[in-house]
Amino acid sequence: MKTERVRFAPSPTGWLHVGGARTALFNWLYAKKHDGKLILRIEDTDLDRSSEKYAESIKEDLKWLGINWDEFYKQSDRLEIYERYARRLVHEEKAYHCFCTEEELEERRQKALDEGRTPIYDGRCRNLSEEEKQEYREEGRDSVIRFKLTEQQPKVVVPDRIKGDIEFESLTTGDFVILKSDGTPSYNFACVLDDHLMEISFTMRAEDHLTNTAKQILLYEALDFDQPQFGHLSMLLGPDKSKLSKRSGATSVKEFRKNGYLPETLVNHLAQLGWSSKDNQEIFTIPELIEQFSLDNIIDSPQVFDREKLDWFNNQYIKRAELDRLIDLALPFLKQGDYIEEDPEDEEREKLGKVLDLIRPSLEKLTDLKEQEDLAIFYGSLELSSEAREVLSWDSSPAVLRALKDKLSARESISPDEVSTIVKEVKEDLEVEYKEVYKPLRAAVTGKISGPEIKEVLSILGPEVTCERLDSAG
RNA sequence: GGUCCCGUCGUCUAGCGGCCUAGGAUAUCGGGUUCUCAUCCCGGCGACAGGGGUUCGAAUCCCCUCGGGACUGCCA
Image 1 (spheres, helix red, strand yellow):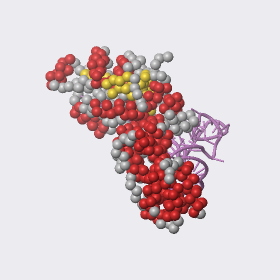
Image 2 (tube, chains in turn yellow, orange):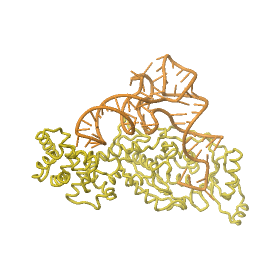
Image 3 (spheres, protein in one colour):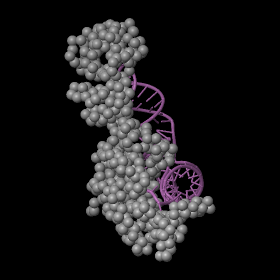
């Protein structure tokens, strides 16, 4: 069997957004599933809007997501190829030079619109004589090369592996441009040439390319190329149900990274937007995703990219992350907060690990670390809240704190279980309720009346610091 | 306007003619666990866009209507 070859072909005119990331992901999953190759192709033929900066950031974001590619191309490196094929089509009289200016075309388009007609290029430059062409050239007019659609507009059928065959009664485009006046190819032309030359076996892209695919099929025929298979993914929508755009809030992968999301969160959520596993599994590892991925389970209808579930996923993955990795993931965000300035080492790192492990269930995003009040317990100076003071003013509190201190002061360290034991002893010795021990203890040690498990807190803080705080609170 | 795609809880989805008084997840609400918050567990609310067919039987098949979306560039 031939190797499956798929591609992701972004244009470097902006940061990678989640829609593009999903297309990349689906292609990648498909490639991995079939032991195929993923080709990354930067479509930078729009010289004005493309920039190297964006091309780099797209690569960076893909890497961050764990989407790696096997081959890399840039269309701007291949301009002679497109030009050569365009000339070939002109030579075969399947394409022709058109000298109409953009202003003229715009004027005609507007007129057609005003008259309620579909604006279609009228093909007036199709049969220009050599003299006429020469005249235009002498006038200093630029020309483009247009693809000649056959007179008897044939029905185009797009065979779609996801949606099934899609028939176009008629294409609402006239002779479209394949080579622009600056010599760069237009999208459809470059795409067909590259997909063919790069031996792409399956072209999977979002549904907004459906009509492009129809046009491209005409090009495949004119060029006498075998066609790859096609597949169209539904659109990703914003909360307003229109095509996801910057207006829909944060949409670039970069922003999600910056906002404290884990790459596997995004991968998982994106994978399950328009695809679902047979048994409704929701939390996947990457190998599971690859194993279970199939075109059969792709959904035709568009889906809203909603942040709520993403946050839930992120909490799930934060809870699951390996501790050492979590520390590394957390550090950049911690440094943005008030408590940690630089990378801790040895015992400090170990302590941080314990702290993170303790508070991770409460983290939805890593950015929560910037203002995590619980961190103050371990890294800040103690301030008693008014609620904490109230608890400490209970009649029973001073004696409880004293008793706790007596039991702790002789110790070097203490385990969470030992805290439970001590609390129990104090409760029994003083004949009070658990609450009357726990609450003042929490208030004195953390300054707050709510927070992470107090026995874990004491274990991390250690008896010495704990006793100091019991002192100053008492 | 034209062409094309799509239509199950707010959102993501299961469902591919009977297992559906429509299942799961999330969000939300309530309860439980806990010294407390978070986590976790249990429960509630909540959808087949509408109308015609076909069929013994339709969320599932067909048609129409309505609704949403995309495309309609010398952008990709």
